Length: 421
Image (cartoon, rainbow, N blue to C red; front, top):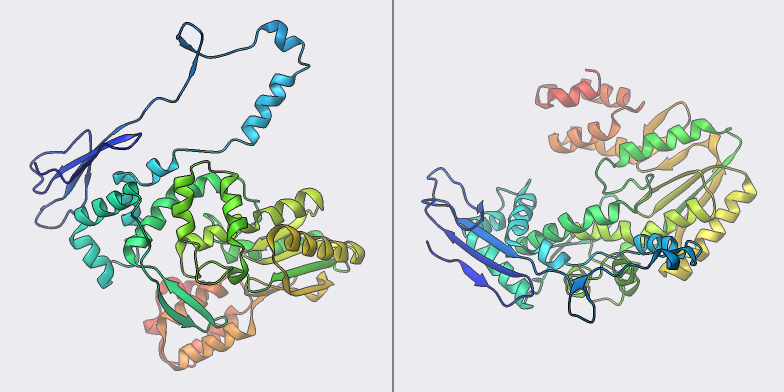
């Protein structure tokens, strides 16, 4: 067996070893890193020796747990229970570096990173030397030498012009390794009606919730819709770091997290990173809790930086608009780009849909894009827009356009089913 590498100079000692010909398993845990048709595998085994946490010692040197006497508890007027409750509420999680950047988690992160990208050259090159690539990443991370590679930049023009920063594939693997560890931690604190970039979320769920809440209220009541100015470009990275630190007490791990927030500008985080989506959720989470807990907004929904509060009087709508504006300025160093207060009966333009109580349409721009995609026979765009229009009254328009062109045989059956064709 050829040892791929050993690292024992850490507080939590990790020994990694493996073999290349699948003649035997390696170590206590083994991961099949490259299972091709010839069964020429890169198996890496990992044994993780976790050091015990520090505990209390008495004067004799015996190790134990310090507990107050019953008499002390009685005299505190439930002080102990309050302290325990506060500790649970404010508990920060540590030792995430070792969990995120173990060989096993880096391998699983690779599997996540290659989804939908298996035919790309960068993915193939990484997978060709998978064992070496993963252990190089492991060494750089644990030795403190890891640095992200320069982004590949390009522009997109839909729905508006933006600069996209595409990470190097090995950096995408590290992002997935971080994501796998921190998503469950932060997701527990997110408001239920924050729908962007979350498991079980999406624009369809956000739109359905919006219409459901509209139906609960009289059409003469108001809604307030708020939009943050250049949100990703204006995120304050020091505020973002502090939000990380409220949940995580692993400084070394946070430093790696912040590498994926860095830009050449004084503010902002890169659009195009996997982690930027989660960082945006974390950054705006205080707004959700402020709106729901302090302002007592019952019908509230957010998608990235678009916020809607539904079913309030005109005075309350103005108060919500002003209070949230002050909150995002004082706490998050952000400001509005647009805001709107209008009656529910006039409909809400949100997450790509024009929504009323009884009916919903896609935006006119989506209808224009669909017509253009049909003329140019862009099947992928057609399928995507059909999926977006599912469940809306715009499907009849889509059906009529498709019927005029001889491309129905190129459209997948599942997409035609969305249009009842």
